[in-house]
Image (cartoon, rainbow, N blue to C red; front, side, top):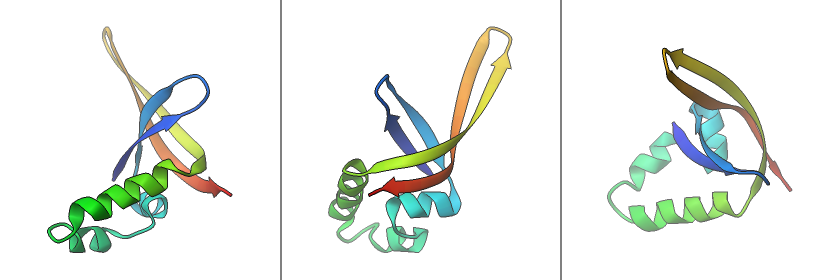
Length: 85
């Protein structure tokens, strides 16, 4: 699962990506992430964050609105991503 901060020309918000979609965004697998957990982890994860930040993405989001009395919460899940060349 990846928590991502997405931006457009109006604002930014946090979205969640799971499974293969998350792997496509960070361009590695969970096994790859676990290999770097202890060794060179900070640099490895920093490089992933920089790479993601420097790219633009076309995304398809699933929006779910949860209402519990006065409380309203929106959940945004990434369904599809495609890097923009």
